Length: 213
Image 1 (cartoon, one colour):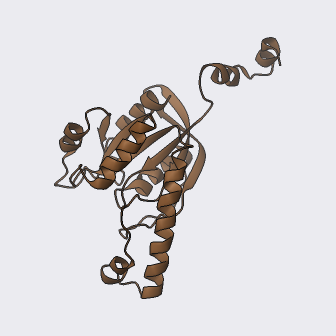
Image 2: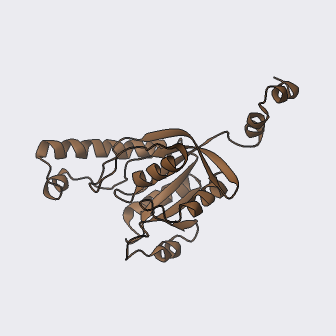
Image 3: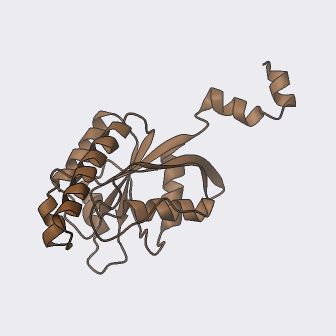
């Protein structure tokens, strides 16, 4: 189709995106278990699509399969960006079914099943790194930033040259220290926020548009 035909069909915006940028970006939400990934995914989708991605809980590995919500148009400061939001299982270096029994009161069969599904979820999340265009790395601002999981995920993303935003989550809690995350990872934008309360989400949306567009 020629340019004149494209203009007449109302497809100029799509034509511009094909030549000058992606029509849509897939953004993965990554991080360790219980950092608040699904809570953040739900916040983004609810704010702009009136929906949610899935359930979240205090039990680790509640999300054990990748979930994707397409065509979520986020807006901030007069700009917008259309996303596929990809909510991933928590990345962990060790998943022990005994923890589900001893800490969370599951019977052995349920604990073993959850541990197996969680391990499969970690593998699936890592495979998705090939397909996403950028990553929001969710870290708990109340915890030591230099965990093995945080450093491993970030090193992997840097090796793949994926654009990254660090979401310093749970800033609503009294011991939160987003400054520790900023000092630990000065090479990446760090946005203090709370996915649970919605605190500073506008700043995160603005940073997402700047980083991923």
